[in-house]
Image (cartoon, rainbow, N blue to C red; front, side, top):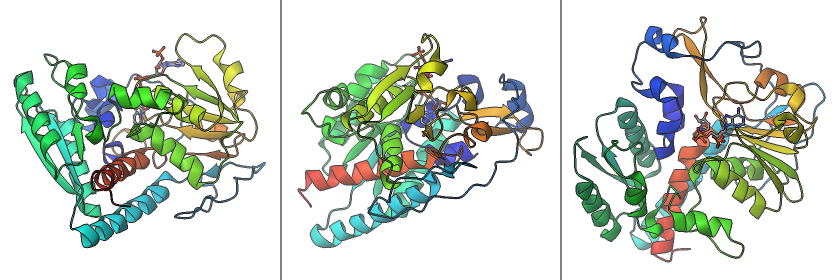
Length: 362
Ligand code: NAP
């Protein structure tokens, strides 16, 4: 399943509606029955092929130039590969120079197949760049104390530089207090309130920034898309994507509006944006007529919609109607292949940063 491979931080378990993600290996027929989203005209099975912006590994390129005919594609798959290669090179350099290998620990509680898949993918991603991975798998009926015990052990273990608690936790557990138990120095998901608080405050620096919004901003940087002074609209205000994305844009001197489920006339607000980050979870919600000509669109949404042409009976689309947006925007991330692959790349990058910081390695 594409989305599972692409979006594999602890946030990834939230990518699909609960009914959809219960069993990632469910048959296509069962999945289609679960899909409640109607097919919309723009959700055609063929993704148009547009030009891809050139991108460099280390230096940003000049800003994307609007093309009257079609938007340029912001290729998250390609950029994430560049970042993984950079992380891999730095891991090797660190190992050679000081004999330290970064380590990521994942705590998994319960037997959800989707969570197990995400954890397996994280492990694979770590292996691919030379990061050590550690895993604890506890039964669903474990007591909270057991989870605290393992988190505490990882907090004290100098070979572990990042700790992830795979979400969702079983319902008898208090997610907030468990996430708060992760040392902020190892909070590579960036969800600890101290890291989020620092992100929100002027003159303070978070130790880590949540991976998905960080991936969105990284895409803008890598493509040389200016943020300073721009009007940006973030659609969605979740703790894991929308809210930190808005904070990050503000830190980069954009002027931000946040649209949420109670916003009146969202189209009017969205139409003012030079940059749109959509993190809603509503297939094709943002239509072409909502977009200012030349705007840049980062589409975080990953939504399954029925597709009889696909062997699995569904396909994944974003929160933005891609086919319509391509005719108006100057640049856009595709779904899949946009923000999704960036999330895990940022997780690897955060783990490397943590190890470098712990060993004062430049
Ligand atoms: P979430 O926690 O469900 O938050 C959704 C946000 O959208 C809420 O703030 C909600 O507003 C807002 N919203 C809902 N309906 C709306 C509407 N009609 N108009 C305007 N705003 C509306 O979702 P999330 O975890 O942030 O995820 C959002 C999407 O991103 C999902 O499709 C998810 O699968 C995807 N995602 C992708 C990645 C990745 O790696 N690519 C990672 C995480 C999530 P209220 O606050 O008012 O309820």
